[in-house]
Amino acid sequence: MATVPSGREFAGEAVRSDRVSYWLDSAPGTTYGELSGDLETEVAVVGGGIVGISVAALLAERGVDVVLLEAGRIAAGVSGFTTAKVTVGQGVVYSRLERAHDAETARLFAEAQVAALDHVRAFVADHEIRCDLEERSNYVLGVSDDELDTLREECAAAQRAGLPTEFVTDAELPLGAIGAVCLEGQAQFHVRKYLLGVAEAAAGAGATILERAHVHAVEGDGPYLVRAGGGGVRAERVVVATHYPIVEQGYFATRIHPRRSYAVAARIAEDAVPDGMFINIGTPTRSFRTAPLDGGGRLLILGGEGHRVGQDDDTSGRYAALERAAREHFGIDAVEYRWSTQDNFSVDGLPFVGTVGNEGSGLYAATGFGGWGMTGGTMAALLIADLIGGKEQHWARVFDARRMGATGAVRRFVTENVNVTAQQVGGRLASRPEGVEGLTQGEGRVISLDGRDVALFHGPDGLSAVSAACTHMGCVVSWNTAETTWDCPCHGSRFAPDGMVLHGPALKDLEAVELPTNATSGEISGQAEASA
Image (tube, rainbow, N blue to C red; front, side, top):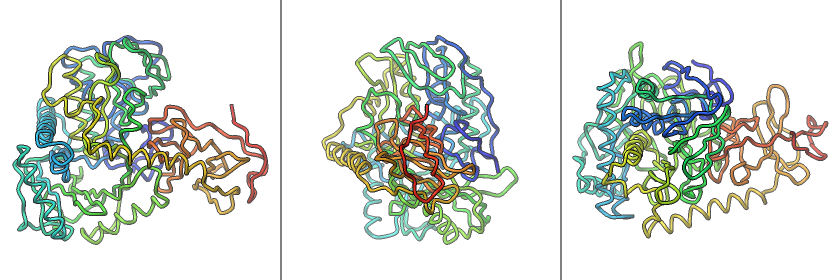
């Protein structure tokens, strides 16, 4: 298994060598250059995941001068830790959109997802990208009569949206399902192989791709200055493709919330391979597919166990639950891979894609794909490329990044922001231990030190400490046992044990704290000092 380098090599989705995804472990690395000095370009793209790489390729092939900046290595952040389904069938999204919005919104949403799926197929064919692209039927599963009623509603709503869905009860369905919504002609692929191929096409068309270029500011209102580690990029337009937008414009902190989810992967016997891509609608979520292995055979990839980022005390238990499910339902002997990632969910159930800021702004963002980033991220790239090129896209209004949202979204908006406020206030008022007793190597804990919340980590070289206040908006971080990271429960920022920022919206590392000389004892006392 590959060893995951420390720091920003993988842009934050894994800091443990045993948490690398299959996609990263089975595809080559990259050696794109780093930013040194200042550059000028027409469009700067911040972020090297599916949105950023795809939009860079689209623009470059249209003759636009593009510079893409990635904090770590491309295709190795959130996009490298997915289950990699490219499907228009996304749970019970169409019935939900009809209820929250209207049938026309659901239809336009479906049309946009179909365009994304078609684009992936065409791009793979046109550029001869070898990425294990396979056509599969997508199944949304139900295990009870109530769930079947929900699925019948979803099937009808999807059909009204123009999709050839079918309600099935006679198929040999997994997980004890007694019915499903089936949508044929969907796709799955090896996401990293795909994105490396798209990046190669982008570079071949003239795009400049820069890695290890950690962007810490986007300044101006057109033209813009994108400040990164080794210099800056001046651009007429900027696409923020950082999963969680790192710019203040758009007020995304009040309109999206992040959820973490988990995946395990293991070799599966040939006679146990499920024929299709699957997700259930019950709790806990189980989303699964298989992937071809280079040496023959297939790998089962089983995901689920979602929760709000930073709001689970036993994240290691999430992997254990998935492993039990893999053994129970698919006869798996040994799990070979474990990884996790996170997704942003919008208050009204639709992604935010397009211009942010003032009318006519050259600043664009994309977020809120709700767990369906392969299709949604590709759709976002298509839309943003068209907006930059001045081409009208009739489904653009559905995803307008500046929209206020439907009436039903107001209640969701209030609920989500009450949760954030509770985390902000509760985090500051919570009682903290004052000592290190019982803190074993590899573990972290938030403690109180002279009235200050301090994030303490017991590493191989002893104890280290950083401020527990997230550098985004000051929420108190929590320790993620499964990933050995500090996670923000408010907006999903994540940090390495030493405080290095791994995942936005935070742009700065947690402040280092100097521990008193008695830090190795059971109790810590004395004044903590911020390190320079």
